[in-house]
Image 1: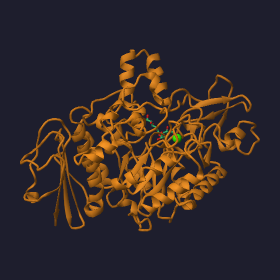
Image 2: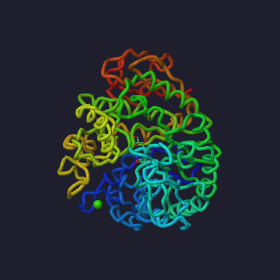
Image 3: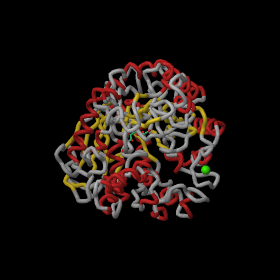
Image 4: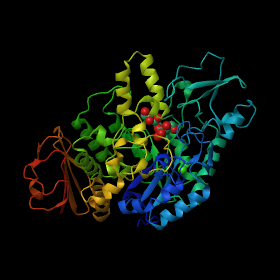
Amino acid sequence: MMNFSKKDWWKQAVIYQIYPKSFQDSNGDGIGDLPGILSRLDYLQKLGVDALWLCPVFASPQADNGYDVADYQAIDPMFGSLDDMRTLIREAKARGIGILLDLVLNHTSDQHRWFQAACQSRDNPCHDYYVWRDGEPGVLPNDMRAAFGGPAWTYVPAVGQYYFHQFAPQQPDLNWFNPAVRQELYRMIRFWMEEGVEGFRLDVIDQVAKEPDRKITANGPHLMEFLRELNRETWGGANLVTVGEAWGANLDRARQYSAPDGTVFSMVFQFEQMVLDHTGNKWEPKDFALPQLKESIARWQKGLHGCGWNSLFWNNHDLPRIVSRWGDDGAHRVDSAKALAVALHGLQGTPYIYQGEELGMTNVDFPLEDLRDLESINAYHELIAKGEPEELAMAHIHRMMRDNARTPMQWTAGPNAGFTTGTPWMKLNPNHTQINAEAALADPDSVFYTYQKLIALRKEHPVFVEGDFTLLCPEDKQVFAYLRRGAGQELLAAVNLSGQEAAFDLPEAFRGCTPLLATQGAPRDGVLRPWEAVLWLRSL
Ligand code: TEU
Ligand code: CA
């Protein structure tokens, strides 16, 4: 049971991310919903997680699956009602589980009443809630591109101007330089705080201070000023957990965002490790090397120790499944999923588990007509237009597409994996007959129980939360091994992130210790089996 009044409770917490559309349907319409989540709280409690981050459930036309919000204070009827949310918050809290909402403060939906008013006339007070530039049809203010393809500017004849959108045209950017906009958002956040949520995830929060005339998107010069005000006007001093999504964060910035004085956020999601296997354009693969990943993780572990806080994740709703990406989703699926889990959960920071990760869920290779995400669909057409052969384009899409993460949760081996009694909004991964929660719960050697154990260990041994970090064998291409030292303990993690046996000599000090956790039975001397992971602990 997490005690949410304890200062910095989130340093000991493990957070579970739910993609509500794909978690559990309760009424047979094929779309996951809040009562569905409610019905799975026992499962989540059994796993041992302390908080649930729900991707947006607010009223939305769903152009970008809820990241286009039409009303921040209303639950989309597709997901349920405000009363359902209140019940979920209450019932989760009764199990020691907090609810985190996903705030999309950079943009709204084009169906939001503010934007509808803004498009009516330049004199409407809501006009300046958005970012407009004069122009003529066909003459764009500049050549900036939107994240989901096409120009970042869309023309509205009624006002004779272009509005700015960093994402889809249905996601107009809010103008944070207008204080009225900021106050509207703060009021809305206070509303949800009063409803009893335990924290927030903040979508693309480092992009709110954009200055399109200077082609600045992330890290605008006024960003920190805005974020400190946001904190003061809302959760500052309230003991909530806040995590900002910041693709543009480097270590310096992350130290400011997660400063221990609590003036901005608890922590940020940074993506340095998540772009190591592509060129910067996610549809262009690049060789991935373990030493590079280890160097990056080590730099962040050391760089934030004592002066900031890390978030730890392999997956989210925008990323492919980690077991397919850096594990082995074939013969070694279970062992590699466990190895990746141990490698991450031994680190300092707050771990996030994305729904289905605890089952070792994998990527899919659906044909175009079964994809649902506007990003992958647009990207496919752009690759084809650039002349990429059909098969190669599809392979690149499959490798990185967000749809991989968004197939429905696999609960049982039965029809639609127990996700819905109706027609699912998105196809299920056909492997749900083998990979599902029911099977995992019945198998003491499943990936599920490795996660359960890792969550419990973090609460039991203070070194997980407090220990510092030393990387071992940095050049080794197979083994990720590190030491954590603090609170009178020393933890050693040794993980073989390859499908071949790897040499590994247990450091002298740990000889004779019984492992805390070993994914393949008693460890052997001097060697790690393919995808084997072991944690050792000793007192200092
Ligand atoms: O994602 C931010 C973001 O930059 C993503 O578009 C990311 O670049 C992309 O997935 C990688 O190709 C956040 C949300 O997590 C995402 O789901 C939303 O679509 C996006 O913001 C817009 O709100
Ligand atoms: Ca439903």
